[in-house]
Image 1 (cartoon, rainbow, N blue to C red):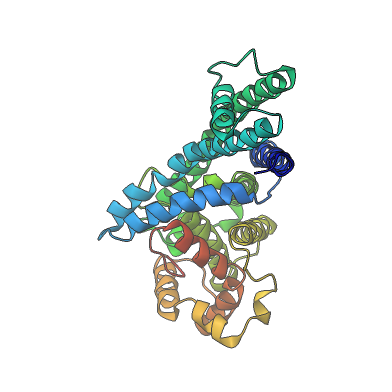
Image 2 (image 1 turned 30 degrees about the vertical axis):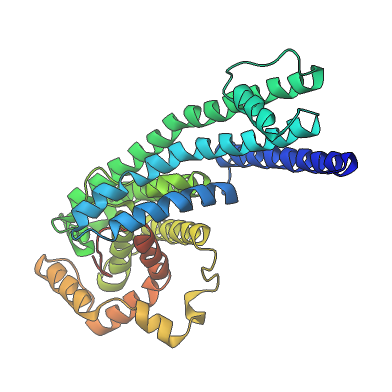
Length: 354
């Protein structure tokens, strides 16, 4: 190989290495520092690779409990794999930079990169420029690790707040948890006008999920401590309860319930679009008849919920069929998002009315 060609290749290696380092650091900053939802391809690649392994193991299980135990490790393992991927790419990038700065060969460049990245030491004979980049690499390595570690408390605090509400909703919705059961709990005193404070708390919970699960998307994959719980199922219970209240109950429509319903629809659809880039952006009424029919809730389950609420003495509307039509139309606003997220997260089995 001629010296001119070798020099050109070293320069190209340095340019490519510099681009790789900048891209990796930028991805880390956008992942944990930028306060908005933004897809980072590097993170998607790392989590996608880890997810493929866990999916392979989970699909060979016979029970949901066994599958849940396996998938419970996915998010923590993916979170640990993320800085490993960052450090590996930064190490490769600096290897190219050291080649461009005149280090003898690839092996020595890689050794110098690894030594600097892991702060194992440096060389005093490599020259000033190489030492400058060596120190910068050590700084970046520490920065990436510190960045993740410093955000772990934030992640687990958000997880804890989410799961407290999930557990509370499950307790109030009965066993098994149903939207009609949640409405029976809300209307135990026959007065739904006193529940605005509860609906406000659920609105705040849904808004926080919207923000946290798109700015820190790994949170969506942290599973509940109990195998039968899921934040997706809990959000669906709240929305179905509001939908039933609007459609089936002959009570005044509270502005707070409408706000909570709107917050939930927006949150679930935004999270859906974040994880599914092919998600539809048009309103439900523009979908094909076949798609709407496939996503339609179960009429028999609605009839069962109607009967349960009627037996509980809740004030019902006179026409069950009209109530069913209103419920069905309104559920198209969030049904697709719930179904997609349930499949993505292997959430507990749920029907249209749970």
